[in-house]
Length: 161
Image (cartoon, rainbow, N blue to C red; front, top):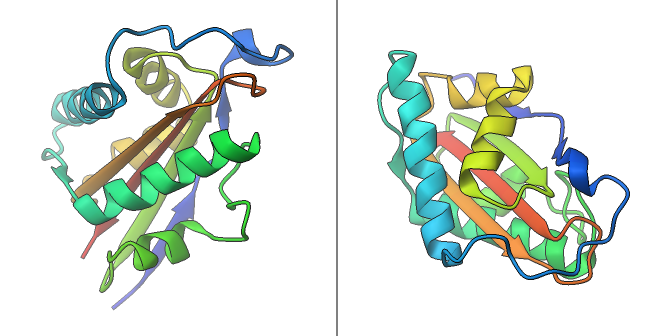
């Protein structure tokens, strides 16, 4: 069995690059609705490319949400957590074990689900993760950090068992 681990470059919203955001979230949608919209939009992109829909994974949701919240709580942006955690350690700690492949997209400064998915699709590395037909599961995290550098923090975790 070959194990795959893949991270992509981070995606930052251009409008937030040098500004500390203090406004409330741009969307009236709840965080749960925003996460569900990311999954729906991601699956629509996969469908257009001939890939099967990703199935939601509670474990990957937990891993992704913990990382998005960590970025918002500690005002940082990246794949490594403030505690040194990695995509792999977070997924396994959340119960996503026995995996054969994992991939992760992160973004910051994108206020809506449509904006973040559009940004990921415009980035070759992120797009590759979304359109990797061998990936079967998805988890999405979103957190808003008032007064943080980017305000909106997103994590999208993918896996195959």
